[in-house]
Image 1 (spheres, rainbow, N blue to C red):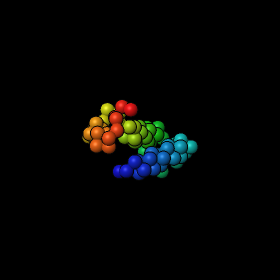
Image 2: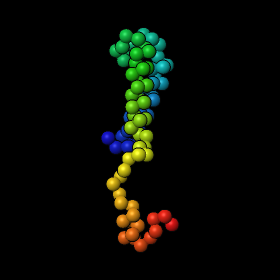
Image 3: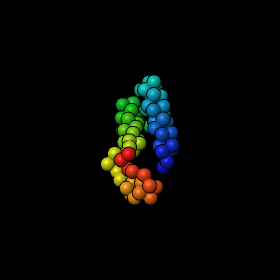
Image 4: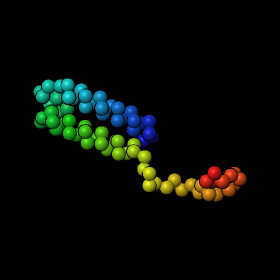
Length: 80
């Protein structure tokens, strides 16, 4: 999935969470086919956490770019 698709999915989950919160117990059970409203709210919240974790930038990841060589080829100082 692209970053855009992940953001769209996250937005949809937030809308689903809001909709489910606004439903009464009986309607939520019928619409989402669950035993209780709290069950679907928990599932949606877990999915939101998953999407947010995926969208968080990983600061420890290495993009395999040799920045020293790139700057040397361009004739500039990396630390200027």
